[in-house]
Amino acid sequence: MIEDKNPQRTPLSELGEFKLIEHLTSHFKITQKSTIKGIGDDAAVLNFEKQQIVVSTDLLVEGVHFDLSYAPLKHLGYKAVVVNLSDIYAMNATATQVTVSIAVSNRFPLEALEELYAGITTAAKIYNVDVVGGDTTSSTSGLIISVTAIGEVKKGNEVLRSGAKPNDLIVVTGDVGGAFMGLQVLEREKEVFKVNPNNQPDLSMYTYIIERQLKPEARKDIVELLKTLNVKPTSMIDVSDGISSEIIHLCKQSNVGADVYETKIPLDPQVISTCEEFNVDSTTIALNGGEDYELLMTISQDDFPKIKGNPNLTVIGYITEEDRGMHLVTRAEEKIPIIAKGWNALKNQA
Image 1 (cartoon, one colour):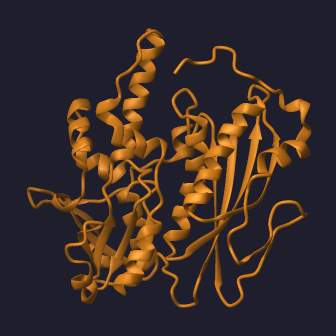
Image 2 (cartoon, rainbow, N blue to C red; image 1 turned 45 degrees about the horizontal axis):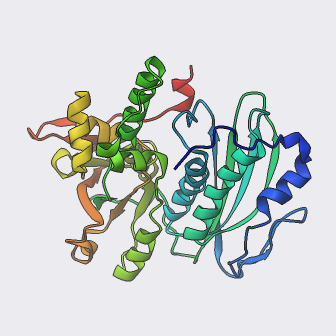
């Protein structure tokens, strides 16, 4: 396919804010019964009847959370929605609506925003959520995306971080560490490209981990699976900052301790091989990498027979009494205190 060397670039100033919003949002369709009024009025109108409402907001800032030198705008729009939906699913809830706000500098033409919103549209369609509002404004420092996700859950079905009890099993979905290693590959190839712009990277052997970084998926399927299995977690959180950070959140909120077994942590073979290539410890990456957007939960031991052998769920440890602390049990059966070394945007920008 021949690349267009002179793509059309429509300045945003030609449209103005209101025409821009109308242009970018005109194709959003309403699919949820709870959406009474979406985009086009002073506020969206939602009717959840007897359901409880859950709301979560995330902010993505260029240069802090993403790098447009290797993050395609369509993927970025998709990811911006998905990372918010992950928080809704971590409450054992169903995501129903999102709002999307952007601040954008004048270096972005209309066509770039169309790409961004194409990703947003794709995510909304796949996860069956309505885009019901948002805002646009100018930025002096690049692109900023703010997404608010709204969901519903029947009273009594919500799962908080504070319900874990001693002897509960610690369970994680999927595998972890892939997103962080995908980022390392992208950062390395970016530096190579800076030195030699004619050198096109071959990323075919890193397909899985790069997709985990650029186009993650939220585990909507797990909420549906748990319902089918008749399993209600005692606590749950999404893995956005690394397993170690999330374990600490659950334990502190629940006033408990934890033992996590190194040999039980699920790792994709591509993560293991890439860790070896970068000469880093795969367990350290799994514990501290972040951005996997899997779900970490605790369940009663009585529910173990229901999840046993399920390929989507891995038991990695168990909850202990608070005074026993939080530990990683190594392959050598040594206990090492779990500390949070995951992503900290404020610290990393200091």
